[in-house]
Amino acid sequence: MSAADGACDKGHDELLDLIDGRIHACRDKLAVEIRAMNETVQHFSKAFPVVDGEIDIAGHRKFHETKIKAAEAEARFWNELRLDIAKKGAWGLLLILVGLILVGLSVKLGIGAPR
View 1 (cartoon, rainbow, N blue to C red):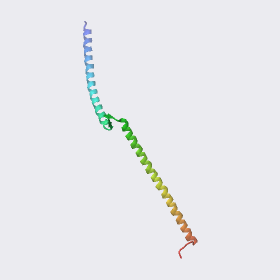
View 2: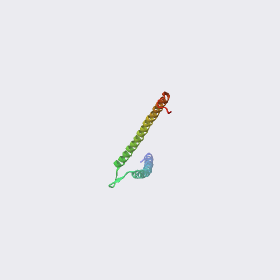
View 3: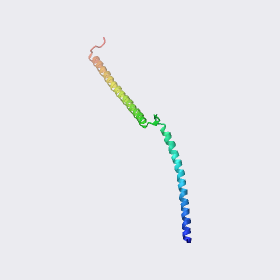
View 4: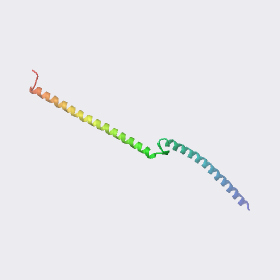
């Protein structure tokens, strides 16, 4: 075995130690990340109902779809109510104007004027 072979083995051992250290460091970081992800999943899973011991994702979605439909129906109700009030207000104003015009004409023409 020559001196070059010994240096190569020493360099190889150092490289293996470096790689092994990096693997352990990454493994530790991954373990921390996995723990954090599991905590996040547990936190979010509290938002879902549990049916027969299982998380009911479809039930959660259905709940939100129902809430969205209710909000849309409420918005439609208020819009229709505003439109109906505006229409009735416009008709009422038109009726008052026509009445005033008729009263004004009747007074001007002397029809039904008080004596």
